[in-house]
Amino acid sequence: MFLVRSGCFLLQTIIFIGIFHSMNNNIFLIRFPVVAGILILLCSCVTTRQEQDGLTVIRDMPETELYTADIQYPAFDEEPELNDLIKTVVDGWFYDFVTEAELNGAVYDAAGIVPVYEFIVTWDITLKTDTVISVLLEGYQYTGGANGRNLLTSFVWDTADQRIVLLDELLPRLVFPPETDVLASECAGKLREKLIVGDGQDNFLEQMIVDGTAPIPENYRIYTVSEDGVTIHFVKYQVAPGSYGNQQVFIPFIS
Image 1 (cartoon, rainbow, N blue to C red):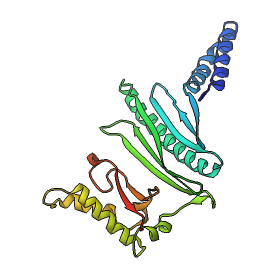
Image 2: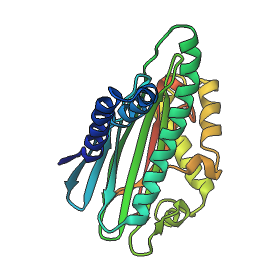
Image 3: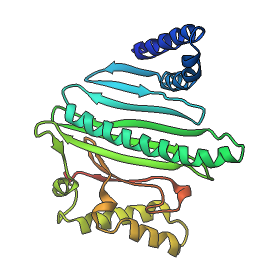
Image 4: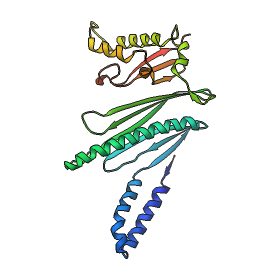
């Protein structure tokens, strides 16, 4: 592991030089605090890279007076296109978080309150072979209010064709006939077994399961592959109240 600090060291050097010159330059003395503030803000991020077998774990930890963040994601050797997809998602999540944090922070600042917002990204590799890489990215952001927001996405990557493997392509190995309606029925049944207890007369939860597992693409956009089957991931509030969190349904491959 090594720390990428060279950029911060250069910026810090510029700051110290600026302080020295500001002693003999009244114009620069007026302008320098603004520039220094920006440079110090840029220096508040430490990036680490840890090499593992076939990949590098990238960790960014930006921190300001408004927020802290701990962002971790993998970069795979010889898979630049997949790496670009992963980084684009992470950068998009972080951009949305910072934008919302700054908007909400301005409101709190006007009231004399200094909130500390939080942003976290973690990852999991569910399968890595010579032909397929399956990655789950999970995020959390808090920008005020009673609860934070969960973020979730996945990538099933065909290393030979350099493309995302669609869920429809996996259906023949999961259900028969290989149709989304059949998969939806399987998922709904497994969720009922897992979530509805007692006499099974929870109409509200039943309706959430029906809606959240309906055979439409947006309900099945997050899925990961393992050696034994496919896991369908349902985000918080999709198939159950928020207190239940994210839900998963495992569908084994047909033997």
